Every structure is written in C-alpha cells, then in structure tokens.
Image (tube, rainbow, N blue to C red; front, side, top):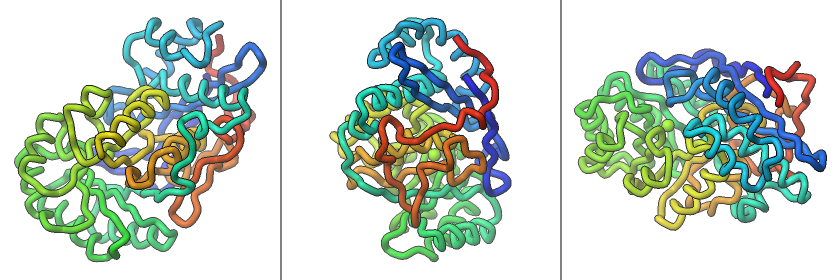
Length: 353
Ligand code: MG
C-alpha cells in the first residue's frame, strides 16, 4: 500500500456545505500474484465529509484486509474481502481494481475485454465547475469548452435563486450538443431544491443531480419536477438503484466497492433504461484508467459522460495516461488497465503483507 497527494489543478474545488478541496491523499495498492503478475489499484475519497469514507479509513481497512488476501484467487477476491471485513467498499475498491488489472495482464487482454467488450470506442468527458460567483463559473465553462469539453457539471447548493442563475447563465452559452448537470451534492433543503427545480423548469439540456442528502428527499423533489434527475451519493448498492428509479445514476467505482460491483450496477441500469455518468470520487491515472474501461464497455446511448480525473489533478504516477483528447476519453488498449505505474514516484510502501 502506497500513498501520494493529488492536488486539484484549478485552485479550490468547492462544493455545497462549505466543502473545499485543494489536495487529497490518494491510496494505491499493488497486488502480486503467485505467478509474478502484478496489478495496481487506487482509491481516493473526496475528503472526509463527502461520503462515509476518508483516506485514513481506507488505509486502516486495507491493513485489515491485506493479510487475508495472501493465497486468495484474484477472480473471487471480493468474497474473501467481504468475509474479512464488513463494509468499507471504498477501501476494497483499490484491491478489486488491482485484481482486474492483474487478471487482464495474466490473460494478456485489456480490462475492457473482461468487462464485456468495448462498445464506446470513445466517449464524452465532463468537467466539474466549482461553486463560486456566477461570472467565475461562466469563465471556467468557456475555458473548458475551448478544450473540447461539451459536458459541464455545475457545483451548486448555496442559494436556490443564485444557483438557478448560475445554471441559466451557463445554459445561455451552450449549443444543442452540450449538456449541463446541476449538482447540489445533497446541499439543498427540500424547499430549496423545489424552488431551484421550479426556476429551472423548461430549460432544455439540464439534468438535476442529487439535490438533497437522502433518497427519500430526492424522490419527493422528483415528483415535483420534469427535469431529468441523476442520483449520485445515495446510490451505494443494487437495492438503492432499484428504489431510486431515476433517469440517471452517477456511478463512482469506490462508492460501490470497485469495478466488479460497478459493472453489476451498470449492467442492471442499462437494462432498466438509465443513463450513467461513470467516474470515481477522486483519483489520478489509475482511477482514470479503471473508469475508462468501464465507460468504454457501456452502450453509448446509456453513457451520459465520464470523467478523466487525471485532467483535474496535477500529480501523475503512470505518465499521465490515459490521456483525454478534445474533451473525449477512450480505454487503454494494453493488457490489464493498460497503464504502467512508475513505482519510484510512490516512494516506500506505507505497509506490505
Ligand atoms: Mg455528483
């Protein structure tokens, strides 16, 4: 287990509730199989106040899990982890991803082949625009548009009237191929979410994301708006996905426990007619590679967008691969995750078993 810091590339990343991020500790795991094949995985919670997850928790859980993994089969590693430790899917995610990487390398195929085959050779990427004065947000959108980005997620949740203005100002800049996601990260009280939804009613190309903290509140908001809605933080497992029955889900690998469970939710959601944002809470090159493989194996009409978080962060441990191009991403084609970690950049392990 290794650690490194991931600095946000644009100063302060601001979400509702005064949550501000400038740098986050990321945790990387390296698994080595008995035949010498090595796999890598990463988990990076978005600070301690976003989900029930934090960097210290991931590292403590991985110390618990590591001894149990000795002699385990990479194809059934989740069974071993779930027997050893209840919950802590965000920690298990790094191991799960590393085992997919190892399996792909052992079989000499990309993880995308193992996840069902590439259906989207390339796909649109989004960029999150931190909460701030409307003028600053519009400027950031213009900057990203100039780099080919066509999907924008606006961080909201301050005041519903000001938030509606933020969305309107950005939508005014858009053309028909572009999409705006209004994401409050659960920051509105019910009344404020309804006020914001009413103010945005009728605006085309706007998705409403996770307006309130709980699924129950989000369902109440949904009953009062025609805006297509995406749920994010509250979709932690299959049962939540089935109860939600929304238009879309923001699927974050570490929130659901890694690629194995994310694939299950993705496949189920595709059958249910949902549309997905595929990404993780935060992360660098390894996280981006894992996201790219899941996104590429999603039918294009079910994939709203993905994020390449290694474009959002400054610190690269695998030569800044995969690399976005003109606002679009693609899965690496080499075996496993298809990116090569430079161990020298990670220093000494924090722990090994
Ligand atoms: Mg979100």
